[in-house]
Each structure stands twice: as C-alpha cells, then as structure tokens.
Length: 338
Image 1 (tube, rainbow, N blue to C red):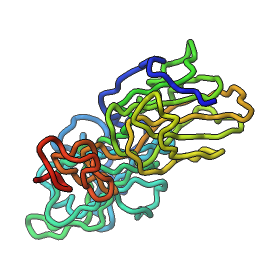
Image 2 (cartoon, rainbow, N blue to C red):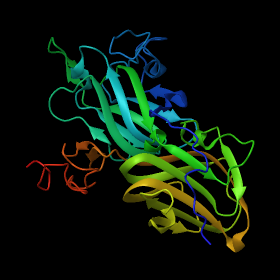
Image 3 (spheres, one colour):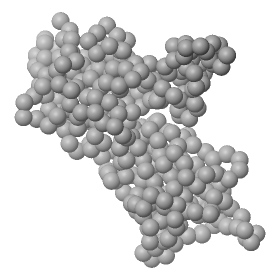
Image 4 (cartoon, rainbow, N blue to C red):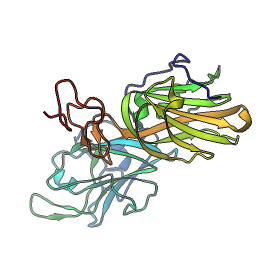
C-alpha cells in the first residue's frame, strides 16, 4: 500500500536564496598575467564589483591564442541555475564574443553546447546568465579577441573580477523526509548546497518531498546519496500540486535503477521521490543533496532565458511562452496582452 506523506510530518526549513557553489571547488585559467598576479581564484572571492586590480581579479596573458577560465566542483556534478559575472570595468570590448559552458569534461575548446554565447554589440560587464544544466565544470571561453582603443589588435584576454555559480531551484523550498529518524541531521541540509552533509532515514517506502513553494516548471532532478541504496526495488518520482495526494500525481520516473540525472518537462509545486523495496522490506537512505533544474514561473525556453508575458496567471509554456493557466484578471489573448 502506498504511504501518503502528510504535510505535518515536520516543516524543516525555508531557504530563501540560491546557493553560490564557488566555495566547493577550484578555479584555473589558460595563462597567468604575471607571477602571483591575476590568479584565477581571485574571481571567486569578494569584493563583488567590477573594480579591477590584479590582486582581486583574474587576468590571463595576451598569448594570441584562446583564453579561458574554468571552475571545477570538488563533489562531482551540480545543477547550475544561473551564473553571475562581474567583468573588468571599462573593458567590455575584451568580453565581446565570449561563451559560457556547463560541461562534464575539462576539454578545451569545450565539447558541449554553450549555455550562453554573446551576440552582436558590446556586452554588459555585469550579467546574470541562466544555464539550468547539470555539470562538473563551468567554463568562460573566449577565442575572438578584441581591438583596443588605439587600434591595436588584442588576442583573447579573460579578466573576471567576481563569479557566482548558483544552483538548484529546490533551494528556495522546503524538504521533507519520511520516516523521520531521531538524532539525525534535519532534511533541510538536502538543499543547502553542501554535498558533504547528509541526513539518514530508514523504513518502508522511504520518501523525500520538495515543496517549491509555488508552481514552477521542472526540467530534471539529481539526487546525491552518501551511501548507495543496497536494497532492490523501484525508484519512483511524482509531480503534483498537492502535498497529500502526490501518489496520484504525474509519474515522471519509475525504474529499478536510479541514474545520476532524471530529465523531464513538467509543471508542479511538489516533487516526491519514493523508494519501494521488494517484498516491502525496510531500507535506509543517506540523502546529501537534491537538485531540481527548471525555470522559475516567470521564464521559459531551453535555458530559461526568455521572459513570460507579464499578465500570465501562473507559469507560461516551457517551449512557446504562452500563458498555460490563462491570464490575470482583466487580460485576454494567448499572450495576455489584450
């Protein structure tokens, strides 16, 4: 018989912001401006500004070849929702034509599609770029170069003064674990951005539920366990808009194995993972992090970089941006502009 998780089984924590993951990894770059100057790790520490100095910003040398800055996560893969960049002040020309990647390899040039590629015109030197991808590396890449104000041709140069790498739309929500295991850390650590802190529980039909606090668009999920689940059984993921009737919601995944990433396109408020062991035997899980990639209800598109119409009632369609749940009061039309 399916266990129905009740909402009163412990509200653990509301997380009110995304997590910057740059404290969990290392930064490298293609070259160094000078010994001890322009180090790649300068970009992951404050100050948070465009003010330039080789002691606080990264700086590659002008080799005439491609230039890059790379961040590698220390714990493996992470869901990246967006990346904030503060480039060197007054030098948007050196940023012109850059590309941003979230990848699973450190190959240069990157071997995956860019989550962002700068278009025509000079870019803003401060940007927050949505990516919504799972990966082990974040790479800022430039193979274009620029023309200096004196007309001199400059090869690609990377000068990043601050970079924030944010993860997980679940970090704005509530996490529930059932059964509740006395004496263990709370389930809230499963969306705190720390992949080394874990919470254990055991029982029949162990259940993890994330409440996103509002209806949104999910594109995939990632579960990180401290220890593998040793029992045989079915791993099932449900999407629903009600915390008490999740077991009659949409089944997004139902298999006997659990891959590192589960992809889907669904609109929901609650995401519920349940492990159903064979023969109904108790099982134990040690959950360290749950990540949900997706668009906030105000955005759509492959990288969630397009804005929904202002007058949508709820999220818009992930692919075409039309108002899925109709218009706010007084507005009509497929884009709620009338």
